[in-house]
Length: 107
Image (tube, rainbow, N blue to C red):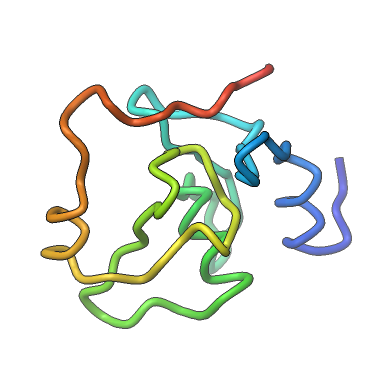
């Protein structure tokens, strides 16, 4: 499918859940994060969907920043649920292994 913009692609490939999360409907990595294939500098790359959404809707990440899911749903790409933080803060906010809410993935 040909998209008019990256935002259209992100919108079409996500589904709103009851918590207001935009759950990525494309590829999902084994640990629950969405993946999006894109052409970057003439090369095909597989990127994290939540990072692509953050940089598209909010801003570029500064060196040393990571994107944290405030909703704790790894497949969520809603920019209102994402926050740029340091690695230290991201690790401090981390939930115990296995307690993340996995977004529903319907194909």
